[in-house]
Image 1 (tube, rainbow, N blue to C red):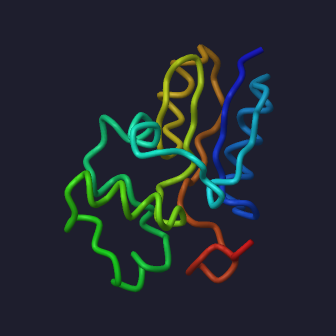
Image 2 (image 1 turned 180 degrees about the vertical axis):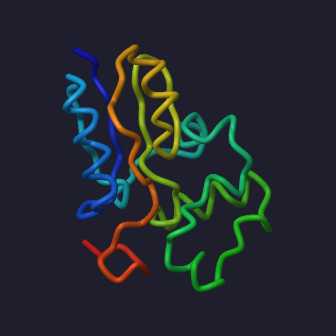
Length: 137
C-alpha cells in the first residue's frame, strides 16, 4: 500500500480521473483541498522545485487563460507569493508520495516512484464541460 498526499481542486473532473488511477493501483490517498492551502513558501516550493517558474502556474486558471497573469513574467519569489495568495493559480495536483513531491500529474514519474503501472495515460488538461474553466467549488 502506497500513501499519497493529493492536493486537488474539489469538483475538478481531471483530478477525479487522476485519483481513480491511483486508487486502482492500490494507493491510499489523503485528499486535501488545494484552494484551502495552508503551507508556507518553503513548503510549497518543495512541490515546485525542478520545474521552471512558469510551469508552477495552472495554465487553465481563469486569470492565466484571460491574460491577467502571465506565468513567464515572474521570478520565483514573486510567483510563490502569488500562488500562496491565490491557490487556484497553482498547477495541480500537488502530490507527495514516498518522499517525492511534485506539482502536476506526471504519470510516468509517479509510476516510477510507486513501481506500479497506472494504466492508460489520461489527458491532464482541463475537462470542464464547456472546455473553458473547471467549475468553481
